[in-house]
Length: 85
Image (tube, rainbow, N blue to C red; front, side, top):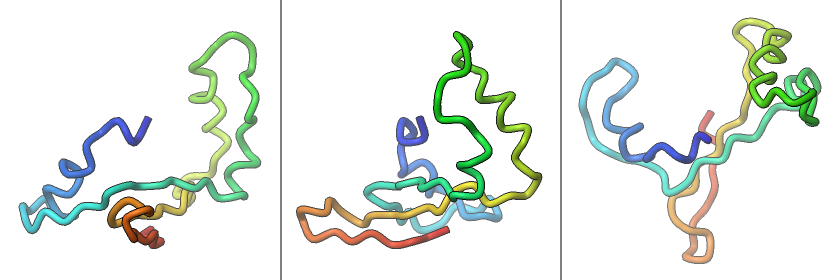
């Protein structure tokens, strides 16, 4: 699961691999785009839990798969969610 990785570590370096200000979100939410979501079945196909790897071969190269939303702090504490990618 994507959330199993500490978000602080993901922000340690910029896109050029340079260390910089460590500004990271409280939470990330990955929302699948409908065009991609329709290419992959939601039900488990047989008993193979890794079958989804084969199913992703139908996704065209360079496709945008998710909208990524970041939350700056917990919502009950006044946090807000923003589309970041």
